[in-house]
Image (cartoon, rainbow, N blue to C red; front, side, top):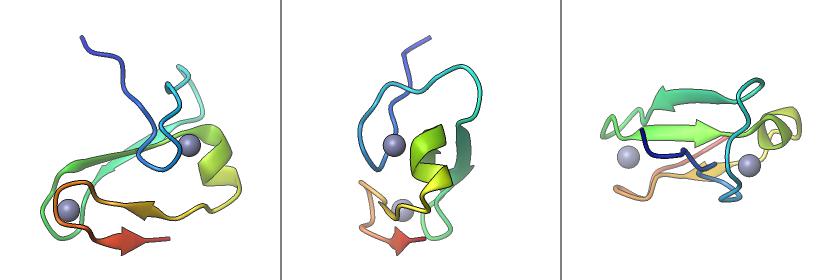
Length: 53
Ligand SMILES: [Zn+2]
Ligand SMILES: [Zn+2]
């Protein structure tokens, strides 16, 4: 399995505390690390460019 990286900060995701969900527009998988989730850092979908909280 490939290592997942945070979509927001590109950090390698830790085993716990990270979250992943499909982009609401194109369903591309978005990954967020614990830190970005805690700080509510936005993400940009690399496929369709959708920006979300
Ligand atoms: Zn992050
Ligand atoms: Zn998308």
